[in-house]
Image (cartoon, rainbow, N blue to C red; front, side, top):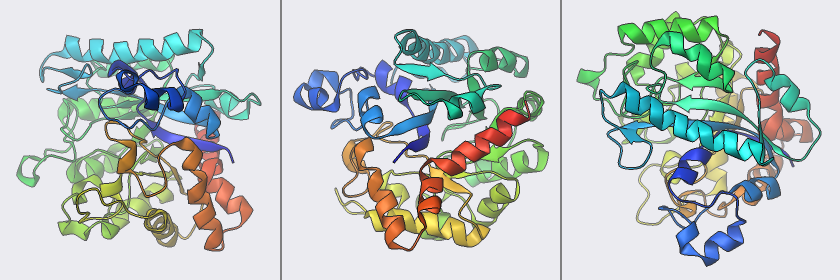
Length: 350
């Protein structure tokens, strides 16, 4: 089975001292290679072994964060430097022949490649490294195909999902300009970490394609009053993404699958697939859901559903879909086909 994973924090993991070019077996034997969130789940060889052929690989930065991706809230230069450090990581891997970086105008060609390597488009998760809307064109030249204006804590451009209701300003004035720049360059809007108001603002203003690279169903994690509710999609947002031709990526972080987990408790694969099924029920189609695993992007491999700890385990999601009566074609659509069709449409409009 081949997979398209719409959310992997590969450069962030590397800069946090995980040896991303090593097999997982070696990482597990030497804790010095694992980085700060052991046990590790993802390295470049493990993605190849698990059949992950295509991915959106992030440039993830965090205002006031503790790691190398962090920067001061108002330090625009430091934010750009943090983003460029991750970009250089991807370029270095590409020079070594470990990955291919598709330009946003030719991602469709990468989807058709018949080699066994990993082709990535770059997703900016938190737009602070883009110093101004005019700066976005340069990032697109480097391989950026999608932009999420915020991470949880918000950015200069919009409020994030961790913003309190009283502080939720939605899009800022410069954020409105950035939405317009994203549209003009045919870049995709990622809604996954936006606040409630920012989601509504983007959907009202944006004219281009939208997606949620790594989000689940709010209704299945406690509803509107659930502890993590702002991180997940309302039913009406799910329907609107599908109406605009977008795709939603299933997030495998355990607390994003079931609320109220105790201690080291992990949800089941079945519970993860419940989110997939709900998206299909709401949209009336199996064409608007795929994988956006976020696999151990800042958390342990044990913080995913029971039995899924590395890319080779992703096939268990497909097995569950098959057990629920999904056809081979529909299962392949979830694994890769729906994302590939989405990016083909986007690329054809460049």
